[in-house]
Image (cartoon, rainbow, N blue to C red; front, side, top):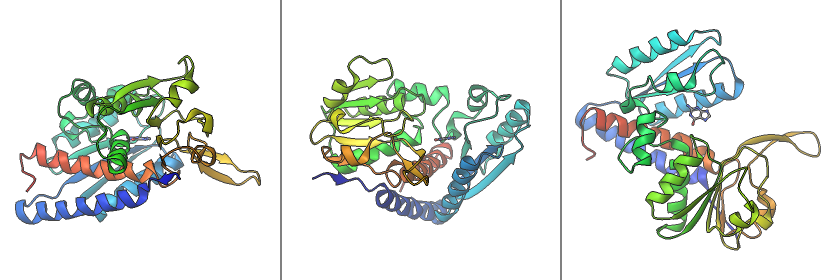
Length: 291
Ligand code: GUN
């Protein structure tokens, strides 16, 4: 019987723990962590993400600073805003919601953030820290996937893991995190030979490709733990919009040992880990201790 990995419940528990730590930090050390979020343009999905981030930031007792800019804003204006936030001592975390409009280089903007405030973990310094096994801020989505895997399986030592997808935001950092846990890690992608057979060998399968329901039942080994990072909007048979992952949930849940649903799996974990990263950034940047 496949067991559902309930990201919603696990994220709620983690968020409650973070709120308790924030309260303690505030009472004992007079520190209230602050998160600044920059949204450029009016993309409806990004607006929803940013609203949810701001709401949850305040719910755990942190300060939330929202900066909404027109889609016509220049790159220099965004860089100037980041420079001000880097210098603002009340701001512990800075997040620039992606994607950005064409006139703005994501690379330039992300790398203008002070790495100590880069709670997305996308800055080359933080990506380098993770790749070389040093301490730093780690991208929230792969961190959330790892949290779910450890909650579900406990020790990951020696497990055969396959990450499907090689993006800088999910696939690569995910593989690095699994390696840090002593898994034997394969990164598979669109050019991988015998992809189906490679996937079937994995005891842990993390899928982040952005292709609706691509991974089928035959791709998954008996008893594997399957983490589905995809969020795709498709039309069902009656023409209604629905959200599905990169994994064919109905088929795969007949063979997998554990599986995350979409929605309610990885999604809720991403914001919880963003809050955890903001707490970590506040503690480390201000030289405080986690008591
Ligand atoms: N857009 C989609 N996912 C993310 C994310 O994890 N961080 C940021 N900054 N933007 C995103």
